[in-house]
Length: 289
Ligand code: NDP
Image (cartoon, rainbow, N blue to C red):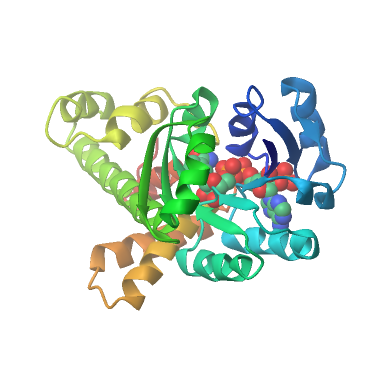
């Protein structure tokens, strides 16, 4: 199958590499040098222009937001043909993806929103969780392709539901990060160092992915790599917050999480790593790690 893969960022770069064993893969990236590097490293073909991607049977996008996805749809629009499958793996906006799907449908193009969870390690190892939204027929077209980089695939429902549950998942991640930081600050002020606190929590009922997999290497070992931009996590939380608002859901913790992330984003900057919100949370009490 001829696949065009658009967006070789922290996630897209390793994800695209899993497709080459079974498919003809053309890669496109806004900064072309990244696509050329990918081609040299994995045997994909670097597209010399975006237009070159329109001949593919499948287009996969994993870009920052739905806005960039729509920009790419606009640019490719005149050359897009019926029968194409558009698999959008961006953590996008469900309302926007529904509008995009309706627009593509007028040309007979299938659209599946299929955002991912599992971070860079999941992308590198092909062990991502993928949550897909789309019709049964469109999901059936997408499933085998998704399996190239995922070990868990859930067909959530109609178009937009993949993006919706992804945003909600990332609210839980964000709220968890913030609350864990508050608890570790409180523990430290009480005389319990973070390493000892985490040892207890991670063998107790308060443990989570945040306390087990994220915080020990940061707060205890002092390593703060950039793995997921804070601006992107903030975007997910704002999408979820808007969803709750639109549906008249009373969600005060979600609203507060959104406000806290906005404050952290303003203080830390869009390109800081999302886990650095725990530094900002600690700083509110005069602590640092
Ligand atoms: P990155 O910031 O690492 O990469 C973004 C990619 O989008 C780059 O290829 C960049 O190109 C491209 N891009 C940016 N702006 C534009 C534009 N205007 N037009 C075309 N291309 C553009 O992001 P991630 O890979 O981390 O994230 C991608 C998506 O995956 C996001 O929706 C994110 O929320 C989601 N995600 C990220 C995870 C993570 O752990 N990082 C985990 C799960 C989901 P260029 O090289 O030119 O900058």
